Image (cartoon, rainbow, N blue to C red; front, side):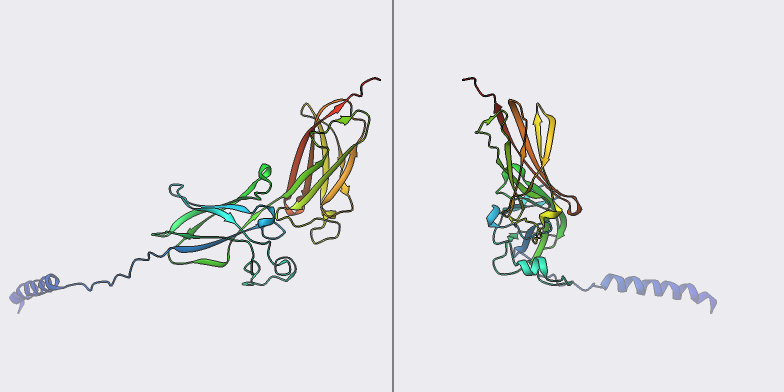
Length: 272
């Protein structure tokens, strides 16, 4: 029996090799390539407040491909600030709708994605205050055919919108007179600030700082002026010269800050 073992082994090898030659692997059924645009919704929110909408000029949103910087979408968030009760007052539960309410501001785009794509989504605003734009960005993966809608992708912009109302650059101030300082302070969405309000100005520190030749000469606290968003104070004993007045609003606990400035002159009164 022993002499036949090599012959048996050889026959078995030939049989296995022959089976391999005639074996045809099963073919995979390829799904139809997804060609429809991928819908994406982005919503930009003022930190600790509401959506940034048309009332403050909206927000510019840019979606770009990380690999080469190619812009896939570029446009404006439009709409209202949203439902105050849903955003600011109602206890938040997982999956609860906050922003996707009728008329609420959003940026919507349809992207021509051919494969899973890493993107940067960047928001710039509010556009109604172009001199003090802030921005926020998020990097994430988008996949063709998987739409991001409803609440959408949420970006937050930190800060306040501050506007110096007085003094004005075009109005010279008389030497020796008190210089009235007045400024408005709102959330980036335009939501109002006032003592004990929903956006409580008691939490804020609002200061006016006077500079001459870029040297800080002094500062004063601005107090609530009795009208929503309005804060006032005065500067005394300012000699003649040219100055820069800066107003800063700060809520460090919530990471919100804002500023504005104006240049003005104090003129020496001419002798009679």
